[in-house]
Amino acid sequence: DAKTTQPPSMDCAEGRAANLPCNHSTISGNEYVYWYRQIHSQGPQYIIHGLKNNETNEMASLIITEDRKSSTLILPHATLRDTAVYYCIVRGWLHDMRFGAGTRLTVKP
Amino acid sequence: GAVVSQHPSWVICKSGTSVKIECRSLDFQATTMFWYRQFPKQSLMLMATSNEGSKATYEQGVEKDKFLINHASLTLSTLTVTSAHPEDSSFYICSARPRTEAFFGQGTRLTVV
Image 1 (cartoon, chains in turn yellow, cyan):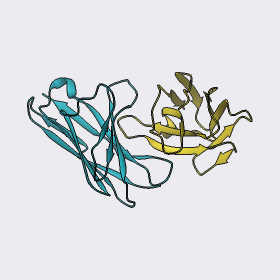
Image 2 (image 1 turned 180 degrees about the vertical axis):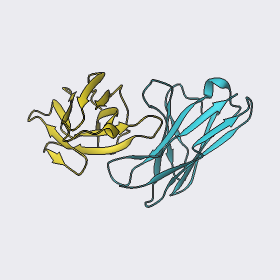
Image 3 (image 1 turned 90 degrees about the vertical axis):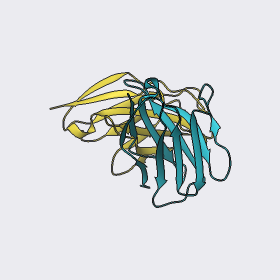
Image 4 (image 1 turned 45 degrees about the vertical axis):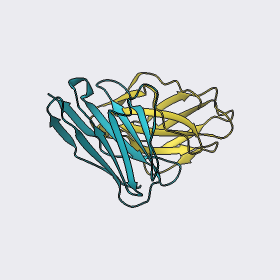
């Protein structure tokens, strides 16, 4: 599975959009981009995933570049409860889910 | 989303004893479940893949005799930490996937004293 690169930490003001980037320049054609988040002392929570089209659900939007080498997770109106470590994972169909270091997002009042 | 439940949420045990952690998929069947370990301030590390009705597959460096995995039904996998030592203290998390996305249990905090 392709490796991902994320900034170690980011801050966001409450009520503003949080845009979390992820680079996956070695992604192959059959690999999906998944986003999870982990709030302190809890198991990871699934957020969204996509292959090549942009995706949106009730939690977030996923924007994947046309060349698929990077993506951005967007939390449209961040709240204090969105403070967590966000993981971007690239993997093939039915492959293991392996975690990198992620981005620690801190939402500030 | 699908629900994966772990039990217990936390456990304290004495050094040298064994501890069993259960992972259940509540609203779907899972032929495969995954076990992770997470040390403080670190990311999740995949320990093993649990396969219903067959032997688990362990990641390199994970002792299969120490971390016993049993996947006896399509909704239950168990991880037993045998002869636990303080260095086994960690956050253990299981996951399963009804489709391509995986769902995770709430985790089990193991403290060995």
